[in-house]
Structures are given as structure tokens and as C-alpha cells.
Image 1 (tube, helix red, strand yellow):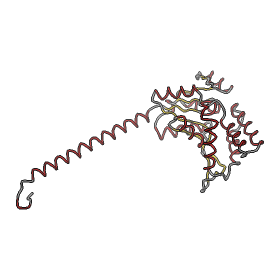
Image 2 (image 1 turned 60 degrees about the horizontal axis):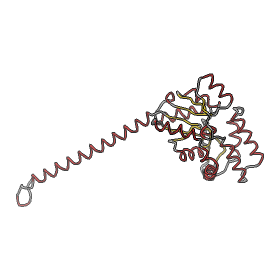
Image 3 (image 1 turned 135 degrees about the horizontal axis):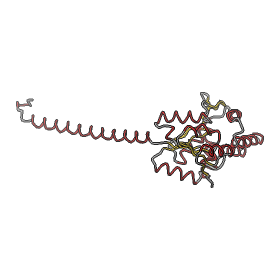
Image 4 (image 1 turned 120 degrees about the vertical axis):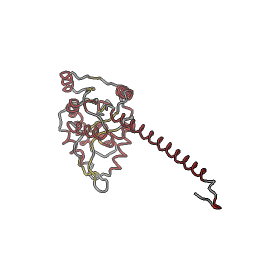
Length: 266
């Protein structure tokens, strides 16, 4: 290279600068690649870690939250005394595994047809903050802490609404949640439909399996904590079934299958 005046004395300087620049770029690239490799290794480690699925009603908390929400809606004048009584009967029937829950859910949703989803989210948040957030059982908190210490992921798996499950997961420090989703029109108003598969019975297994396919893991490595006989398919599907505060028929099934039973109380 020849500079003005015909001198070539600047060539070594240019070459030195070019070499230094290439070296710096190479070092930065290596650093970035090492960072990417570390992040990928962390993601792989987390993805490979087992999952602990927790039911919500009568497992994480001591009551059926649907009953409390019905009472809240009645207090606010949004459902009738007759609707409240029906919700209380459904709550008892569900605990004893004596009702057709999908049919009951469908009937209840008719009342909310046309309601903007934003209104339901606001109602759920206010109700959860007043009636639910403080109900997380001490033994549930201890179980969650143990799974955290083992590097396990925590996921709520419940037949409650998506709105409640999301709020609960955020409030109590879960990694994710799986629950029921509902139909909406193009203006985000509820249509009164529940989306399939319903997160109930065998449907919970489908939701859990789909989640594991997206995020990594296997059902045979997972835990599932629940109180209800309707969750028997999930208890059979996982490698570590745990029965909590069981209804009478689930208690008998747990005894027959040799599943551990936990009594979580306030």
C-alpha cells in the first residue's frame, strides 16, 4: 500500500491495527458463543428436570374455590340465590365425584355469555386477593420448597379457570399453569363455551403431556398432587402420584394402589 507522497511506512501500522481488530472480534465472538453455550446448557438442564403438578382446590388450598367464587358473585349481586344454591350443590357433588362436571360447567357458563373477558379477569383478581391468596396450605408450601430444592419445575394443573390459575401461579411462585380456557368472540366477550380438551379427568393428562412435549420432560418422571377421584387418570400416568386430603373413594383407591396419602391442614 502506498500513501500520499509515495511512502509505504504506514503499512506495518495498518496491518497491526487490522490484526488487533480481528483478534478483538474473534475474542468477542468466542465470548458470545460461550455465553450462548452456557445458556443452552442451562435451558437443557431445566427442560430435563422433573415436573411437580399440583391440583388447586383442596390440595394447594383447603376449600373448593368455585364455591367461594359463587358466594362472591352472589354478594356482588351478579348471580341469584338459586344459582348460588346450585353452585354449592355442584361443589359438594364434585368433591364426592358424584356429578357430571363438564355438564355443570357448561350450564354455569351460560350465565356469563356476552360478558367481556376483561370484566371476568378483574372480578377474578379482586376475589382471589380477598378470598384465596392467603389460603395456600403450609404443607403445600413445604412441598413446593422441597421440589424447588431438587431443581424441579412447578406447574398448577387444575380444572379451574385460566384466569384464576394464572393469578395463582404468579402469586405463589409457580413456573406455569394448566387450566380451562373459554370461547370468546371477536370482541373478547365470552361465548359460553369451554375449549376442548377440558382440563378434567383424562383431559388433565392430555394437558400435562402437551406441556411436557413443549417444555421437555416425561410423565413417568413427574409428580402429581391431588385430592379428587376424577384425577385418577393423572395419578396412574405419573411416576410419583401423591394423594392429598382425598375424598373417600380416592382414599380407598390410594390404599389399594399403594399411593402415599398426605393430610394437609391449615
